[in-house]
Structures are given as structure tokens and as C-alpha cells.
Amino acid sequence: MEEKRVYISLSGLPLSFELDWPFHTSTSGADFSVLHADIRLENSDGLHAPVAVNLSATVREVMPSLDPRDAEGPVINALRKEVDRRQIEFLKSGKRVPVHFSSRHYDFKRSKWMFGKATDEEITKLVARKIYWQTRLVGGLVWIGDPTEALYVETSVEHVMEIAQKLAGEGLIKLESDRAAADGSLMAQAARFEADMRTAREELEKKHAFERG
Image 1 (cartoon, rainbow, N blue to C red):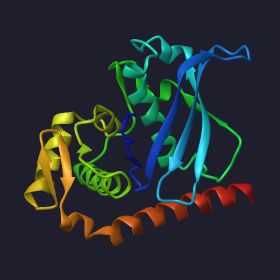
Image 2 (image 1 turned 90 degrees about the horizontal axis):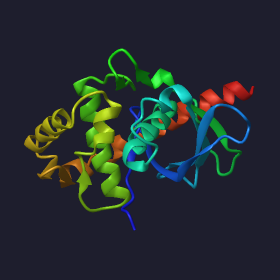
Image 3 (image 1 turned 120 degrees about the horizontal axis):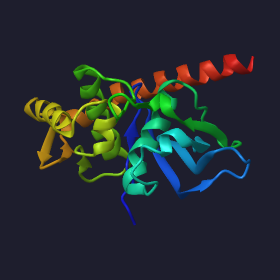
Image 4 (image 1 turned 60 degrees about the horizontal axis):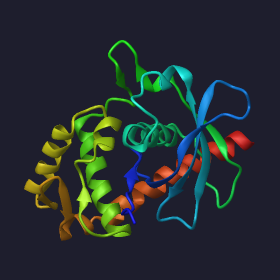
């Protein structure tokens, strides 16, 4: 069984993604492909968001294939971006909602995915939070060289590793190639990481409560 991977929203929410491969043609007659998925809000009481990823024909043309090796990273990041934009509501149960995986995530002029350029400070927070939550929820070494992470913050794997090296230099983590182990000093900051999660979750819930009236 593949090890569970935890991804962090820029706001600090720990997420995991269950993707029901493969993509299939829409039964509605529309010109797009669909992938069912479930986004789980980790460290919660079973909150999740079932979604239908609707891949536009325009973006389909620029993808090498719809196999997981080519599509998984962009799909996870498109969903993570919707969480960061507070478009996803997490419930204990719920109706599957459509998420548009469209040209707004792709720069055709530069032929690259665009999910929003993060600052080094934001990337540092993301890496630290990822190592904390993956260690807390799963254990073992944490894959920092995951291309999906670099893609989300619009940088290179090498740059993410440089930032991880700085965290190692501060004594917060230990690096083994492209994987990291949390040091006690990082795990001792649990209150900060969990406060970040609570704040992000409260803001998300407040937004959706307002929309429901």
C-alpha cells in the first residue's frame, strides 16, 4: 500500500487526497473529462469534501497523458488551490461538488502550470508545516523532494531543498537525501502549527456560513 501523503494549504490546513483514477468522459454531454476525488481535512473529526474534477478540453490538449504519473501533481494542486481560495467546504458528509480544472491553472504563453508564486517565507512555512503534520499523522521520513510541492509554489525542487537545508541548519529537521525527519525542536512547536490550522479552518467555515446566510 502506498504511504499516505499529507499536503499543506498555504493557510496551514493539512490535507490528504484520494483520487479515483482514471479520468472518464463526462456523461452530461459536455466536452470535458471527469475524475472523482475526496479531499480529507486531516486532524479533524472526519471532515472531507467529495469533488468531481472537471478537466477542460483546452487543458487536456497540453497534458502528456491523463495517467497518474502526469496528472496527479496538477490535479492535487488544482484542488489545493481551491482550498486556499476557500472554495471548498469540508463536511462530515456531503454531495460531490464540481471543481473546474481549467486554463486558469495553465500559462499557455510559457507552457507551464500556474498555481501562484510563493515567497521564500511562505515556502519555509509550508515545508515546516508539512514535516510537522506528516510526522504527527503518519510518521517516518517526509518526502521534501516531491515535485508536486515545488509545482504548487512555482519553484524548483532544488529551491525547496535549499529551504529545507536552512531548516536543517536551524536544528529543526534532519535531512537524508530528499527526505526529512522532524527534530524534537520542530515537534515542540505543535501549539503554533495547530493554532495555524484552527485559524485557517475557522476562516474557511466562517466564509461558507456567510454564503449560506
